Length: 352
Image (cartoon, rainbow, N blue to C red; front, side, top):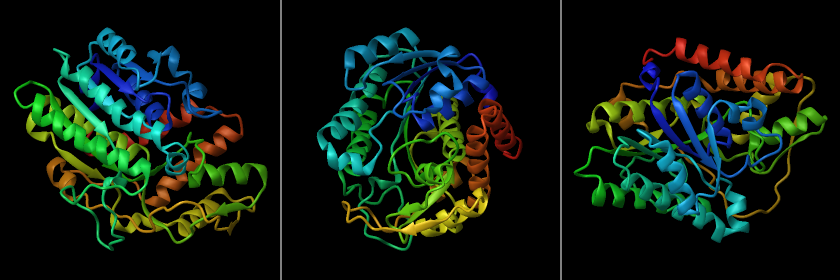
């Protein structure tokens, strides 16, 4: 399926981030002509820099809040496919700087959609949001796409706003045009190359590499965890399918099966087993701001529409994640490690 991307012009916001870097590597490997628009890599180290992706694509450093700069980059790319991943993605950071979070996640999305609206050639548009867009009632069953959108914290709420803005643009401007518009609400992802603050696996890696105990703030919080390749491949499925047939456009949850909704404690236990070398954790609540305790997605719409199913169990996802970080920690070939993991995933995937 990814062969369809060869030679296609693809515009990606947020290309210097963790998911953006993995996505760009997949696109480049598929032969797409990729242009990225984003701030400089948000972490040090960063996956984007480690891979040297700037040498294999058109990388434009800019702020999604700057419409004129984004429009210049967008027009220079003249994309057929446009993928919006740029965001302020950290819940705790959104409490520290809510204004910046809303400016980035809401107006950044508006600026992206404006670029698409004014384009004559873009045919496939995808806005990536989050599973946290829903009004979370701490239900035991998964949220469906038609459940109420009303995220609690500034990050989650700003992404709810970005969803609603996308719905409005789709209804107002893309009903009679060739461009197909979708959003994708993905659950928590793990995978090699994430160095973000306040994320559990990067926190585990930093502690394990330095020989410290892993500090776990909320061991009972339950989330749908999946390997980063799962949602990224799903994003590309949506982008390709709706390019070919507009009936595939829609609003989709993308997450693991119910068996891979794990508590943070269970996830960290799994990390410690895979990492070895005396990795261990301790519970240390810090009375931080509100974060959801329980969250699960119902992904039946996406499964039915695209005849899709997750390919990696959480055990396999953690195996791949730890493999990447141990290659990195040992000074190995991380690009080769990623190429291998991508090739393995695609080989095992009946939708390729």
